[in-house]
Length: 468
View 1 (cartoon, rainbow, N blue to C red):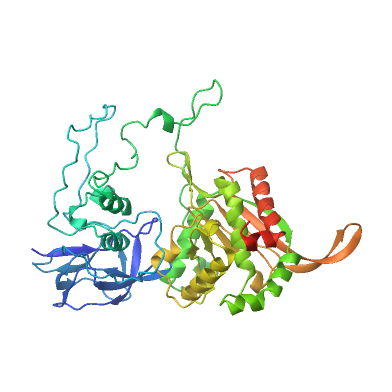
View 2 (spheres, helix red, strand yellow):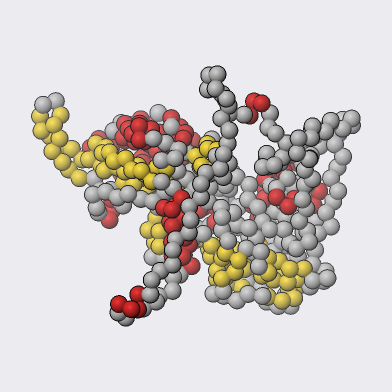
């Protein structure tokens, strides 16, 4: 029986991808996890591996074609099956993985739906046995992301016997770690509270404010779609130029952010005279260690520390649920201008890394992005964004928030200005900053305090360099 492999769900609202290259031929026998196709999506060019081994019966796509999530890409002939031992991953094993689980669309007929209890039903009593029964072994391909497959190989876990807690029975990173922890922890973890499931515990409910009733999550009002365009031909000649896949992706995401998020911008300036002097003093020493200090690394470190103090800016608003999702990790995106368009790769755990390590990672990530070698994981999972246009000039900018984040820091070119200090006029290097944030989650006073926290750290660069 032939098996179809469809474009997997690549996460974060992505619905389509452009086929860049087909890496197999019809009639070819491929192994599990071997690269099948190279696609461009969400500003990255990535390889999609095969979920099982077997003979390629038919290729349904061609280079340059745009395909939707769930569309059939390749059909495998009879005999295609998931291998018991996973093959080597085609992706770079040294790349940092995103902390949140990534999912793929299960092949047709293989998705499994976890049973749910009726609304209002009491939770079932735990089984009397002390050790949970071993999950049944799958006889088909396992729905799991490539990163999850690699994690399973590293931990020695057979995905074919792991119960998936993700949508449609998909195996997540947490499932693999639980299985590796032992028989007790190996049981499929309870799925995170889905809407419509049994009520959460009282401890998880929002706290009441004094004698008032507890806050109740309610959906927010949605915005209508934009109206159709007029016929511009009636006023003169026009030319229609098709958008590239990347430009179309940028346009869609920026339209979404500008339409859904009520933007408000707070302006400030930081005196970076001492910071600039510190960078110049340490250029030679840093280069001797293979690092060239830049202003951007200090901006990242200052923003990470400020986000730790003001976590509402390190969050996402779930408008449908009426809840604020506060992230307890700090992954900062850095806008990088490339020949193809503006791309935002993400540096993870910025708050936990020393500045020199941060600068080294920033330089490598920016280079991969400009060369078109950024992986999909390099571009996902950001919680806050910094865009520095100082190298291009300008006195300031109001950037659009990178949805689904709630804030973005814009940085313009620093300039020498006359400043009064201790009653004397002295030249100081001032850096214009603009903090744009979602007015639904923070007020103007909150934005001012957050921006001041960033300015304060930039004006004391020694503490940033020493990690204080």
